[in-house]
Length: 51
Length: 466
Image (tube, rainbow over all chains, first blue to last red):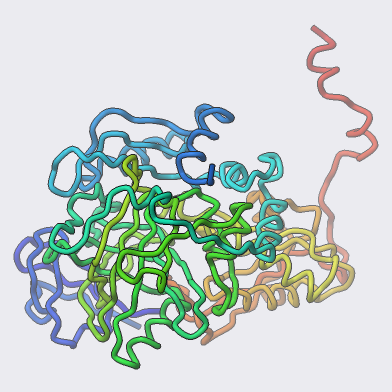
């Protein structure tokens, strides 16, 4: 199963589901809600739980 | 007259009134108006094709291009698309699909002056994807998205391959789309071009006769030409015309509603997704290839066709061909004991397969389940039942599972096997033999005698006493 994580947009609090493959890629994520861009490390919150 | 989306709409309105609804009230597809109407219809148990005659484009301006959605939602409508009897829209339709796969028809090339899709041509700086009434499908989606097929051409064999591939509107460049290539054949072609640092030509076919799209769903080998396969589904040669960008080196369907031509630059990846997809779950945001648009051509009366993602419209289009292929594969392996197969809507037409067999000895159910689960990477659960169970009646399949299955013997978990979708099952698959055990003395299913059913004519009793 493809691993995903959740990143909360620092601008609008939208929770965005992201492929784990780009978690540490340094690629800005794009918020579908406010169209803002942010790095995963700058997310307001991260949910990376995985077992 | 060549078969196209317009001839199909006329056919529906003449032969099956009510199967297509026209909505004249203006809608904003980018603000969920289209999908909200569709969701309301589904909640009322209705799944017609719907033509939104007055949508707004992505500039918020009235668009001259209507939006048609939900064409594939009913198996009966797919049967009509193939000129097949609606009353045979269960397994016989799937078998007919398999037959058509083998019945390819060579395409024909016509002059651009006769090609409806060339009536309006836009190239260069005039290209603006915002002029399309693109639909946003689910809350939280990346943005407006085109959901129909993209076609590529294998550079070595010259064969065309078409597959359903999402193309997102690019908020940073209205001459670019972000495309989610995940079909194995298209991935293979992209690898070829990227390994040589070459741009890959690609075209989006945004509207055609539904038989065209059903033809693209065939599980044919990479080297086979989808334009030939589609001809088998249309029942006539697919009419092609040279593209604006590559001329005769890349042919496009002449009777399409809208064609977007473009190239996939090698090595370029940009953010795309989420998208509420086939499993009714979102696909995660990730990096995807892009398509730099080189031309948009269309009919004057073009209709933008779209798929109601994560609903029956999405499920059925893939369910029918996979059923046909699975049935044929199992028949070849096990013979006539295979009586029916179905990919239920509960599994989105992808995740689960139900198979009925005429069981003659213990263990056959498991053997069939094991063969079935390997037939597609999308299958996560295979359930085998006796032929007294109608696999299209899910309630009966679940009943058989509840009364026949000994979990310690009849359920198997296969670990560490490739799967496609992000479900909690992960890289695992489940086999369930829900056939009645032949080696145990257990109850059998109750029934009304066949003789009595044949003797009693229900209409005599319902009308005879009044």
